Length: 263
Image (cartoon, rainbow, N blue to C red):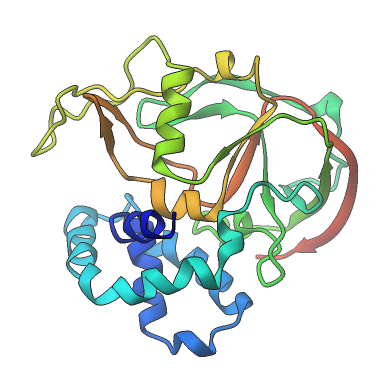
């Protein structure tokens, strides 16, 4: 398992970006909070919205041999990044001080867009991180507005949560709940796969068996923006931007106000 995690980190844009950021510091001196504090910088640098994204990623990949030891070190140092959902410490961020309640849950499980295989509208949470509270308020889009109201929600023991810790798991999800229409096509890429159409999940179908899908920190670092092909079938997770869980229905036993963050 450790070897696979190392390889996944060294072949993913987000994973390589984090390792590169760590390499610029004294890794042995970094606390858990220090490492967690680097996560928003990962998406700031390794984003598809930058005009030079492709050459930037190629430059990161050229650094992989120098980052190998850090890739071996990280899974042991931050083993919790590969953990299943922490049901007691989920954070929801809103722009209104109104209490999040089941009656206000607005879900639209149609595709977000051809380039981003996630639901158009759902209830999203992230796991509490002391130094960040929630990564949602540290995205480039969030830095110029506020306030943000944060709430801790406790997930019920009975909630059915599908875990994504790797690109294999994302591929298995899409294969188990395939969307009938083809997703984004790769025909314009220099080296398209055998099948140029990406297989995306059918969220409505998936929601019949699951209440939510959790993308762990490790799942995000090793899976987002990584085309993955198996037996001619291509999958790729895009646009989640952080560790998070998408909820299709109300699955919480309690809600508690945490704090208001000004950005």
